[in-house]
Length: 294
Image 1 (cartoon, helix red, strand yellow):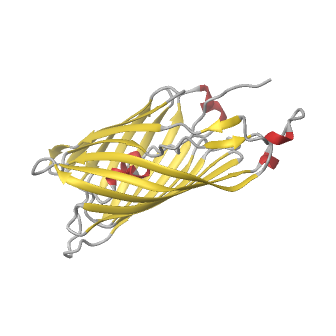
Image 2: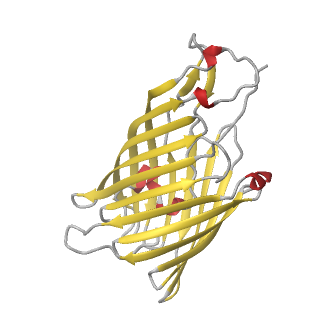
Image 3: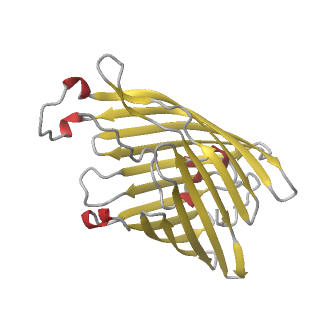
């Protein structure tokens, strides 16, 4: 007997507003400085085989600032599967108005796929052709993105992987047991200056993929005294989240997030945890970018 199922493919982030380049290559270079970020996420803690994700990315403008370059490294583990992504990123931005820019980005790279079927506990005999170990299978990747922004708002549209690679095949290479789907991301945010010491930023991220319901993340963050960030988020029909961050200096920020499921899955785990560290280096002319909310 065979069944068809749909499941999470791309890594999921609560603090997507700080990890934008993972899913939109148009973001590369838009902060105006060399910017690096490291992030760790433990999803559904306490549930055996739950997703765990680590991401490191870095990007910078070059030349007169119209070109951005970067790279992204992501390690994503779910049960018996581990996927490692390596991406090189290039972007080019144009002036839409005197204050607004539009950045187009492309990324190219590869994915290493590992599967350890020895971790499976089987109640009945399974065709061994479906249980062949996969070690460092190399799969190509290419993605596109556009990102428009100024000092007050941003909006982006992207497809981080356009290639629908087959993950597993039977021994004859005929039956596709698992196949990637193209994920489309639409995001946006706006910064409201309440007073000199308080900024509010509502933001939204939507993910559209064939065979799955629309995923919608809604968030609201408050930046106080250009140092402290507090916020909350809701993932449609999935989870609520709490977020906090601290800007140590113009060059360094740390952030935390906690998710709690709103589905029946909540009774089987202790929630999801996320932490990131962002660091930024000097501009070409010796000035540091003032802390920006996105």
